[in-house]
Amino acid sequence: MGDAESTTQAETQTSGAAGTAPQPAAFPAVQQSETGGTPKNIDFILDIPMSVSVFVGSTRMAIRDLLQLAQGSVIELDKLAGEPMEVMVNNKLVARGEVVVVNEKFGIRLTDVVSAAERVQQLG
Image (tube, rainbow, N blue to C red; front, side, top):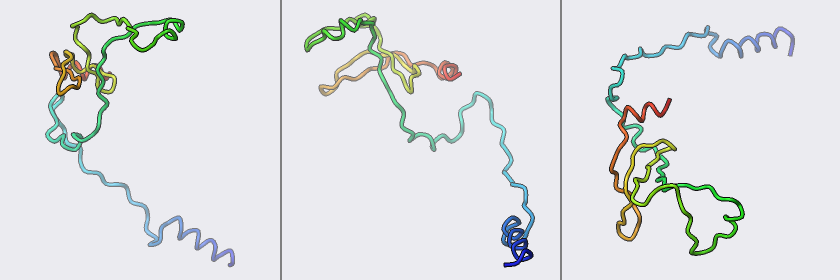
């Protein structure tokens, strides 16, 4: 292959098969929406899985005490009996509630749901 042929082949590869000049991308116009309003169609996100956790309480222990735990041991938590449990979604507080038993399984009955405005503030 000669130098003239390789130059022509390189020009064809860089300028495209048809030899046309690149065109700028065309995007549809952005529509303005009301701030703070609810999107008109959020159906496309309704099936996204989220991690939901219920925070029962916590405590601090020395390793010595942790190693002495056995079946039947009781760990005292920082929450009082009857105090609302916190419902977290992706580590963000969304509600509080009380523990219930349904069909021999533990559940939580929501007693207080964090407002949408407070949930948005937690994101920042």
